[in-house]
Length: 166
Image 1 (spheres, helix red, strand yellow):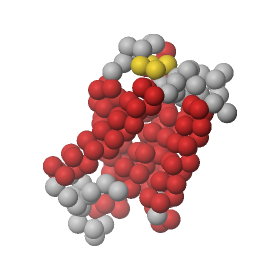
Image 2 (tube, one colour; image 1 turned 60 degrees about the vertical axis):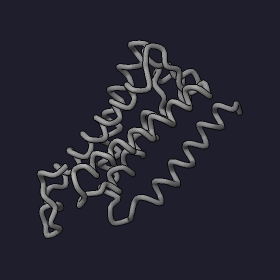
Image 3 (cartoon, helix red, strand yellow; image 1 turned 30 degrees about the horizontal axis):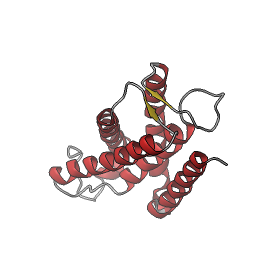
Image 4 (tube, helix red, strand yellow; image 1 turned 180 degrees about the vertical axis):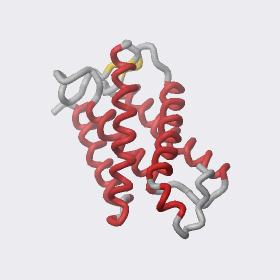
């Protein structure tokens, strides 16, 4: 197995462990919703970016399925978004929520940038790290809005959360 595939496998294992540690049993349906939402969004953006030649994934599983990375677009990014939603600081200030989104987007972008520089898993062709940061921030925020909308009945029942504070 190549170094790059070992790195990819490492990220799969770490992501699975993070999911197990961050998704309580009583919130599995919440986690599934966040995961599927982000998966849908990354599928659309991922295909668009790859087909336009902005990013390449030279080393990937399922090379014949399409040019995107199954690992990143269909598992790792959606799983990280799930963790983002499971730990969202719901009862904190808007500033804290903003920094939470920036922290998660920044951490994912930083790791992606390192992967792009040190491996053959991602190659930026006509792409810059800040585009990843921007799209990650937007998709995290939109996932939270969708999540809140979908579970609005749970948010309005006795837990004191305002539906207007995302």
